[in-house]
Image 1 (cartoon, rainbow, N blue to C red):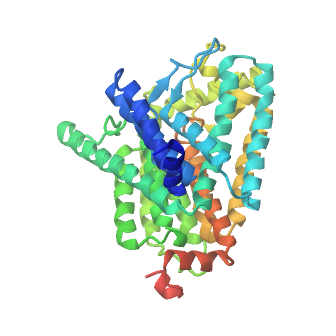
Image 2 (tube, rainbow, N blue to C red):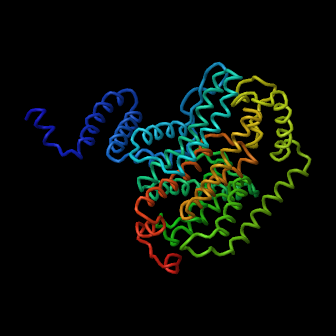
Image 3 (tube, helix red, strand yellow):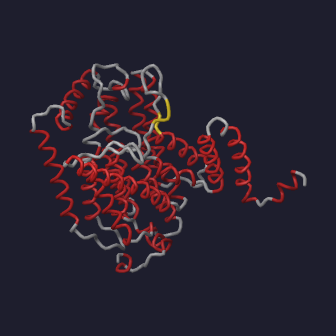
Amino acid sequence: MSADRLLRAVPAHLVPFVVCAVLATVVVSVVVVVDPMLGVAAAALVVVLALTATEPATLPVLALPTIIVVARVGGGGADGEGGVDLSVSDLVLFVAFWAALLLRTHPLSREMRSLVWFSAFYQASTLFTVLVNPYTANAVEWFHAWLQVGGALLVGWSIGRAGRGNVALGLFLWAAAVCAAAAITQAVVDLAATGTWSPVYLEWPLDMHKNLLGGVLATAALIVYQRPTWLGWSTTWTVPAFCLFSAGLLASQSRQAILGLAIVTVVVVLRHEPGRRRRSPVILVAIVSALALVWSTTSAQLTDGNEFNSANQRLAWYADSLRLWQDQPFFGAGLRWWTTGRTSYGFQPPNAELEVLTSAGAVGLVGFLVLFVGVLVVLWRANPAYGTLAFCVVLGRFVQGQLDFFWVAAQVPMPFVVAGICVGALARAEEHGDPLADALATAGAPTTTQEAHR
């Protein structure tokens, strides 16, 4: 049979898979000689790309659970002379962004356009520090920050607009559940061995600092607690999942993540969503208890006389940050200045506003505040069935950033991807009429208020 007749014999919808098989065979044959595991990874990437050709949301969906991986894949550090330190999270987000951008088939909705414009405003405000402080890490971080916000929003949008939000968020929750179980297990083992309840720094299944672990689990807990109706999820499993994520969060002892989850949970409890019964205020007791725990542990550190514990060290860094900012008040010392040796300080400010103030000056801080206030206003005004989760997940990240590093891999794009999913799902539902009614019908959920909240 000639090649032309063979190609005509293959159904059109199978062409990408045939191409995938051929490419995978060639790639594996070449790469497996060098490294068998690398050959398998290359073949898997070819398969994913082929699936993305038929379903554009494939790569963005698969990217969501991988976005929490901060293992380094190159560079050796960002510095003023040139190296670029790349994480798996950054790489996955970068690839997923281009898939979402190039394969986009729908125009952006009004809400999404507004979010992108606010992201662009922040980038414009920080461009001044890139021009005033010309060094490699500054320019690289400028693009990186845009990818973490604007790129993450577009990746999430492509998932929600394609109607794959439940799949992507489900995969993220499975990854978070493994991390939560590992954190609880490690906390119990450490307690039995030392007799003290120590913060958890995971080494398996991923290397995770306690604050990254806390941020991931707080986001997962918020998703299953808010449980948007359009996801079609049942309380049969979301309630146990919320307990698992909350227990893992407590095991991590990430105080900023606990505080962030507590505040956004109050928002979820108090905000009314059309067609949905208000949540029980009983959880407020647990929230007050969590806040009391955060307050007591922080107070104990502030009064124990150890100037190097996390609480007292933060106070010292706050003061040093203000001193540094006074040297360059308008445009700052440059993005990621703490990695370059350009100043006498070598710490990343553990506060979002101070980090931006020292990096991009007062001009950059204005852009940062406009970004977050603008995004939160847009999400608050959106249909509550979709906007509540989006608003809370972004607000939670902002709250966490008041007590810890803000511009870090994984923790910044994670909430913006989730917000993008919600906005994309809203646009998809609006295309069919009333968003809430369409969402209930699509999920196969009961349409009466009592049945929808059983």
